[in-house]
Every structure is written in C-alpha cells, then in structure tokens.
Length: 285
Image (cartoon, rainbow, N blue to C red; front, top):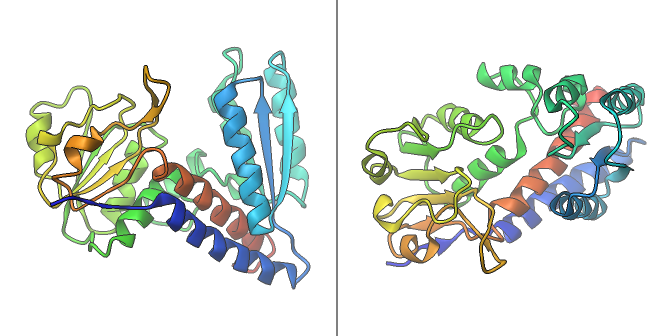
C-alpha cells in the first residue's frame, strides 16, 4: 500500500478561493480587508515568506501593506509602529514576521498586537479563547493541519492523534484543535519515553519537531494519516520534513509532502483569518 498524497497546494488554492469570494462580498459593502506585515532585518527565509504572503493577498483581493525595517530598528520603534497600525481602522490584521533580531523581545511585540488584529493567532488572548472553545483567530499552521486531515475524509472523532512537539506555535495548539474534534490526543516531546511505541499507536500522526527524518517508517502505524509540519534545509540544499517520507509513504494511508504540504496551507489560513477580521471589525461576523 502506498499513501495518497495530501496536496497542500491544491487545498490551499481552494481555501484562497473561499477567502477571495468572502473578500468580494465584503467589497460590495465598501470594505477591503487589509493585512499589514512588518519585516525587520534581512533574513532570507523571512523575505521569501513575506513575498509569498503578499502574493496570496493579491490572489484573494486583500490589500497588502509590507513594511520593511532595518536590522537596527529598536524595540521601542517597532512597538510604536505596531501601535500606529493598531489604531489604523483600515488595517484589519497585523503580522510581525518572526524571528526578530536578538535585541528585540518577541513576546513584548506579539503582546502589543490587539487580539482583534492578531490574525496569526499568537496573542495570549486568542490562545486562551482557543483553549476554552470561544471564537478566536486560530493559529494558521495547526488550523491548516486539521483542514488537511479533514480533506482526506477520515473522521477525526474518536481517533488516537499523536502530536510530536510542544511548541506554542504548532504542537500545543494542534493538540487542542484535535481535542476539539473529539480525538484522543497524546503530546510527545524530547522527554517522552517509549516514543516509537506511542507513535505506532497513532491513527493521526502530526510531526512538528524540527529535525529532518526524525519520524522513521517503523514509527508509523499502517493506515495512519501523517501530517509533516517540518521544514528543514538538508545538506543537499533541499527542503526536507520531520518524517522520513520514503519509508513512511509505504505505511501511511495519507501523507503530506515537504515542500508542498503544510506550508501553502499555513498562508492560506492566514488569508481566511484576515478576511474574518475585516468582517468582525465591521460588525458583520
């Protein structure tokens, strides 16, 4: 048995088409969704991500404001800019591209973004709302992962889902969202004992550990759904996931490729959040 690929690019195109239709409906009421992205410094990967987000905005009819700041920008200057965008009624979503230069406190910057404009879903308020099941902006990568699992037609309800990784950006929220869908969830991390055994019991396996090929074929249960969140630059210069794809593809029922899997879906879910923000801020949602 060879796994069916979960095509992140095709699914992302579908999500962006939904966002574009919602944007068109808002524009008929005189509302143009707007996403402001702040990029500090010259990090090459961050520049690629920001260009991709601007391109996605264009495809969805969303206004994109990209603000590039030098590496030398102080924390005070960055916080002042976030404050200006927070007060600008034309801006619906604010995203500060991470990582930031070492002299800037990332948490202080994220906390400065008003929850209603936190389309990344990183603020403590949105995280808390997600935890208790209240309406909020869901973090884009975990929300994209759940959408990808649902796209297979596999019912999450009652399944054993194993999440490898406990980051605030992916691991923890992915576990919460799967729990909301009535999965039985196990979170694994660097201190987990019997990791291989636990992973082999997973109907749904989400790998978000940041280590190339960490999940080997013998860690995958036959017929599992495997979501590979990892993006690792290998010695060959190519992008690789956290899952040994060649070994896992013969065991899993469904698997995401790297690249072309979770990455496009993360950006697509950001577009959905931005459109939702515009609707909410204008009393339409």
